Length: 227
Image 1 (cartoon, rainbow, N blue to C red):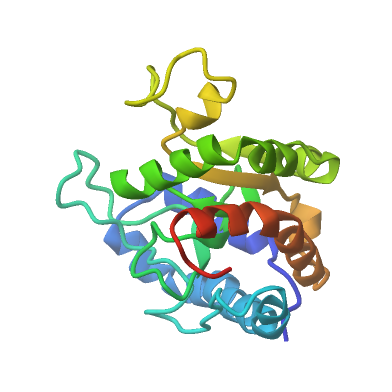
Image 2 (cartoon, rainbow, N blue to C red):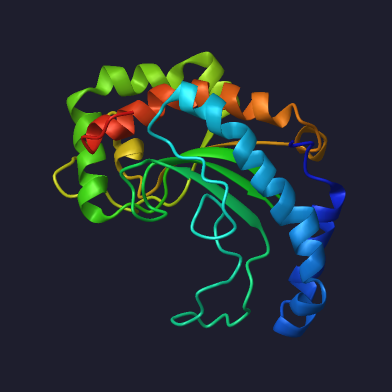
């Protein structure tokens, strides 16, 4: 049963940031498993049924590897930063049609400095970006209506990178040019340490997922997937 994420989880990531090496992690692996991995699996399991009710197309897979928990091990092959571990917990409730982290999904992020619930597509491939831009352009009233609804606007902020210039085929005077310039289509709502330390986080996450659903449905319509 999920009871919340403790302060020890945040402490672990703070210490990992200062000691990001294999020897330190090996000595403290039991802390990771007890304070982070165990509640993360309980969190995912507790969300399976309520998330399915929000939409049956988003998966909550409570497995140590190959499920909703993103790997703590960094891929350093093409990075100048060779530190071996991520200093955050990432949980993605990915769309059933997705094969990697760039598919639509709901997201939970926890580290020492930042905790949030998110939704959308992070760094989609060029063809997907094009499809989303085309739907924004084809149905501007729907896009404007969903992003300007007061509960949505007061809960979420858009995050990610944008093009410096208008994308090909769009004029800089387009009324939605800033949205069309987005490279990432991702929204996030912050969470406090107090909010994540209680079982009520489950209901809070689900309520925000419901609030984000029209946005997710828009993205799914753009890439021709059910939501």
